[in-house]
Length: 143
Length: 143
Image (cartoon, rainbow over all chains, first blue to last red; front, side):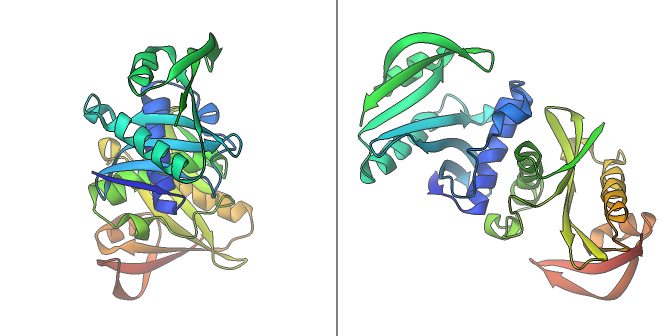
């Protein structure tokens, strides 16, 4: 497993392709909602590659301030779920964030993924809300 | 079948995801060769959608001059090949080009696809050459 954190064109293409497959084609989230104005050329994506030509997991780094990093749009290929790739990708994102001065991680996670994020050390803050039609909770972690 | 020609984020993501699957994962073209500096935010992609959430074919519009349009990075999803989607996508790209003043279409096509492009009205110019390890011929068509 190789994990790349970069805004290189190939890494962005890999991240977008995983989200296209997972969120749009598999889950039915509208295409013009999933891909938004935060997918800029400068955006950093975390991407896990099973082989150089096969990306399998991704996460988008969305700084909220000098100290708060939001981790967004995380997903793993359907064929390799349940193998711990999501937590490796998140861990890599957290390591990048702490190395760059961020002290707090924030995730707006779907309610169905709450237990996963809690196992990764996150705590729910506030009440669930609805985003793009799905119930979501905000979780944070001191990195 | 819906065909979209646009630089909207969702359309770019669809185009990149098809190329990731076809050229990189399936064909083994190096990821940092496939995704190059022409995949800018302004770039127009032709994308065919079987359903809004399922892109199946794409083509990149690469103006070479005010009158010459190169059609590049064309591919169709493995599961739907042989159904005429590639020629519909190319036709849509040609229609866009003629509507915007382009008079000549240019394709650097893999030798294995030469017959396909000839059926679409293209003619080989010059000798085959090697690009990214594959034999390629240049074909043109008066639009």
